[in-house]
Length: 544
Image (tube, rainbow, N blue to C red):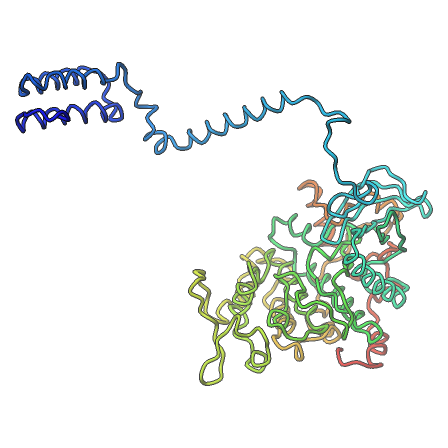
């Protein structure tokens, strides 16, 4: 045809058909050549002799064998796509392994130069390279790394001078972190000065020193944090009685921080920063003052972990000590339900989840908030409504329709009905708890309940079914107990051990909170001397 031979239309169509047949049939997966031969015979019958030579040429192009349908590209890239990917991976890693085996071992002459930081003592993240068994200052024997964060690391060590276990916080060897750590150090020393008897549930700083260009803070060694405790319950929460014990201690700690001589804002109160003194006791202490500041010396706008971030911080407004009370309200609900009350994935989501429970913040706050329009739109009548973002597909409940009443299960046996029939979990107990939480979660920091008045709340009044202390009245020495306690970041090692620890906590009476432990002891059986604290508080200041 391409030579311009004059043939009939039927013959032309036949030859074109044969040409397409020879080009395309290999991919059409026809299993044998019989069909080709039959088709050619049919075409020859209708083709003049002058095109036979062309058909012969085309016939020679028919492949002698045909592709297995199972290995066809179309199948490999559709039905067998996963197999194809697996095969690619196998080939890749096989080649990679082969290349690695062919590379000769490095020696001093071929080894690439690596950067050395702080004479080889630091890694490229400015953290000290911890070596277990290393002895510092001929005093502290490093046992293990027990925590790591943006500030640096925490190690468990044995103090041979005092013959006790301690936790050493090693600050990064970088100026910005050193400057912030020095603020933390100053605040810790200030708190130690005003809490010489260590009865206000704040971690005790023993001493500090510089070691190989790292500021090191030496603390008492504590046990699990409250998030570890929640994890041990499979995130089903602890009893209302144990929640009450934690709440009393935390309110007392916030009351202490609110004294005019301190006026310290923790700025990062969350379950991970609240540690048990001993795994079998309900006494706790607040740790990590790395983000803290004093009232009037606020440094950062972006503070508090998102789940526990107060509305005034989300809205970009000035903040004070009341932001810690908001965090505490969130923490207490989480400790009992097992789940964060407001678990936003970002700030907008966080605010929307708060609005679901508490409604839209008051207009006077939003009118004064620099970031109000990030979350809300102002209507012509002066009221505010939740901003509708077309890019966000998440659906939220209308404001104030996800009621705390249902979240706590006030009349349905507690969260998920799990506390039905348990002593101390009657609707009247839940109503007191709910009222306290709502006062802690007041949008307006000026009307939000303060630590002093929180401790006067009916939720903390004794009830006849409060747990009693079933643990032994004697105990081992603090050093021995701390040798068996775990790190600030460790989790409960087994379900049996965890269950035993939880049972001990649930039955441990608050009236005997670690009276036998010098690191967490109180000075008398009256665990909270409200009169003396009120005398200190009333010396000045407005935050009571």
